[in-house]
Every structure is written in structure tokens, then in C-alpha cells.
Image 1: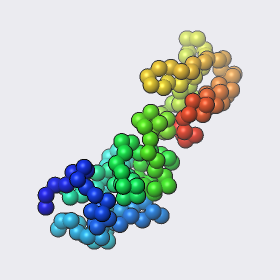
Image 2: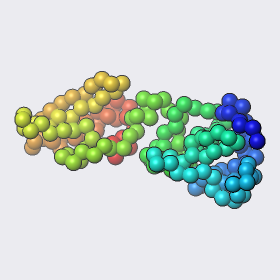
Image 3: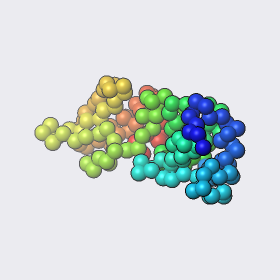
Image 4: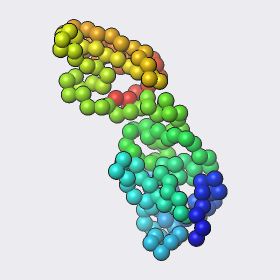
Amino acid sequence: MTKITKESLTQLMVKEYLSYDNITGHLTWIKRPSKKIFKGRRAGHELKSGYRAITFLGTSYQEHHLIWFINYNEWVQEIDHINQIKSDNRITNLRSVTHQENSMNMKQLDNTITGNQGIYYNRSKDRYTATIRMNGKVVFSKSCAPHLVEDLIIERQTKLIELGFHPNHGK
């Protein structure tokens, strides 16, 4: 079979081979594109990154992009998993976003000192500092004494929402 590119792939072609279950968010093979594929089985495999990928007619696609294409008949640059679970491809959990919007709904990085992303303790000054970065620039920075750190956490979370970050950001 000849390799089909994203540009030549049609929604009808995808629906001929794959069935989408909007309750589970899974794609299932309904037609065999090769001898290695079996009808009725879930399509694709999980990558180390946590996303799922499907090789379809000679081209590899991220599962959530194929699901978006099946539902909206368009290819988009970035898709955000609202609940931050990379394998949860229910259409209600997916949204088309810009790269900046996608970065505004990221999981918390490990911060063992405060347990909060963007808040760090400076031992030499005995102060906590909260920062928010957007487009590589610091747009919020404030520090406080250790006994006021809880207020600083709340102030940073409020500022994140004001700046348009998703409520799940950092959780």
C-alpha cells in the first residue's frame, strides 16, 4: 500500500478504517490496513511520553490528532489535554490551542521545598520568591518572609488566573 500523507488523508479514509468511541476516547480498527492489524482491537500504542501513536497507511500520527481530525475534519498545530492525562483522548478533554496556551496548562514540576511550582526558597536571604514566566519573560515576581509563604502561594495562583493560565496549570 502506498504511503498516505496528512495532506492527502481524508476524514472518510480515516473513518473507513477506524472507529472512534467518544466515551472511552479510543480508536478501534474496523478494517485491516495491513496483515499485522486486527479488526476490533484498539489502534496504536503508548509512547514513552505518555501520548498514544497510530501508524496509519504508512504514516505515524498522534492519536489525539487523528481524533480531532475525525471529529472536526481539520488538522491543528497543538491540542491540549485539559485534564493533563496524555492518553485521555475523549473529545471533551481535547482543545485546539496555540503553543503558548498549551504551556499554560502544564503539570507541576517537582518542588520539594514548597510543593508549589514557581515558588522557591532563598536560604541566603531567608525569603521565598514567587515568579511567573510568559514568552520567556518574568511577568510576576514577589518575595516574602517565610511566615507569609501561604499568602504568596495564593497571590501567585490568583495572578496565574488573571494572566489566562488554565486552572489546572501546576497541579
